[in-house]
Image: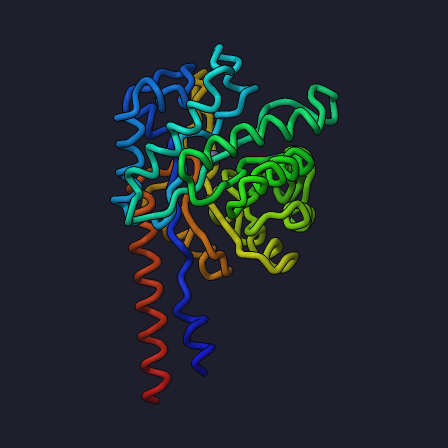
Length: 306
Ligand SMILES: [Zn+2]
């Protein structure tokens, strides 16, 4: 019975939401390298970190999603790779100290292994450089996210594991007839097992097409491996308006929270948001999780007194 109660009361750890759109809201121009702000505009990056800690996050990420040497080279910043990641880590760690943990964000390189644009050895060294710099900046863990190619994701996880820190491996679904594949056709089961074999300490999914579409992905990854599950859905289905290159999301903080709560019921261990979410979305999610917990404990009381 005690076991049943503890299962009922278990809540997912609250994660943060989007960073890129928050930096844009603070003046980052479209087309400018967001990670460069770790060096040139650290106060604004710190502001985003602070707003997520203030929203109640227990784990926040770093402004380093595109902080690998290959993507930074597009801005002529390849030589600043280590510094950008160290500073990104340090900014989040300074804000989070005593309130939250910090996981270093690592995204894809944009190079396609299968097309021979990069070798596995090169990829491993690119991810090792980034994750070592994040580790030296003080992060508590690494999250490899928004991955479509299981081979790139596995190499990133292996590189991140060399830091000795806990590593989360996440892929993005929403493609294929039933929306349960990554852009490269990977299923939730293949992703979970592949990431686990590469050494991930937790597996999951971020981005995609909104919380409702991620419930079955969460359940399937959970069934495939015995690891903790990490879920960061977008604020609904991304939509393009006019000729703008930016995506627009229709969810409100309240509608997002109501839908994302289904992922808590599906058993995710970590829960936050991705594109289109903000500190307001995360606050609203926290309120929803508290209401859920109160509902459970009231239901528990009435059943014990009956
Ligand atoms: Zn996203």
